[in-house]
Length: 203
Image 1: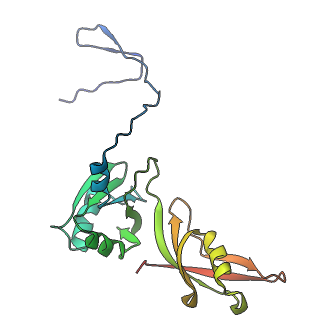
Image 2 (image 1 turned 45 degrees about the horizontal axis):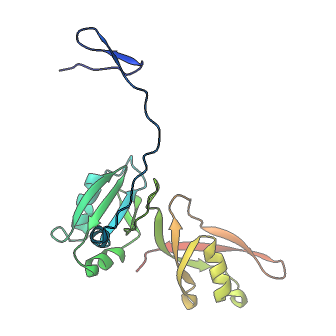
Image 3 (image 1 turned 120 degrees about the vertical axis):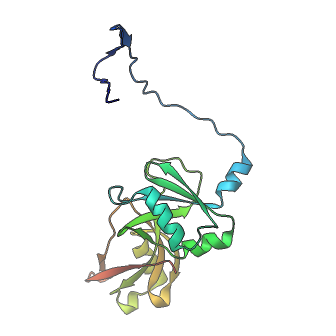
């Protein structure tokens, strides 16, 4: 009890005082192989993968327990802590998946977290997309067109769909970038005006 080891040098001493050589860290990237495992892919297609955006305030284990209760699905879904602030919710029905996704964007402990359909993506930052309905106000009426709405929405992220009459777009927003709440636009005549972006749920 209470013993500790230091790894500050190339050697460490064993109990008999003999030097034990510690090899230098192997930094070569390990190349993995992809196998044709259709069953595994199908299994994870019924999963949502998530990532906390504020690790100091969001503990994955507690988040999982909280969301189980909030969604009232304690007996319907299972969850896995994937490490590095990531986690997986496993569902048995598409209906339950859609019921959860309709409740986004998602918050825990006063901070947002990302939750999306699982995809076979390999990246340290994955997942990073948060779908938002973004209502845009301040566009001059004669410039309120599908083309101009898509042009504005494209600056915020990928535009999934649009409700022109309501002036809102369903946009996949990159959580690694700060949200944009206002923007200058210019008319063909060169006049400028400020428009506002209001972020809401996906319902």
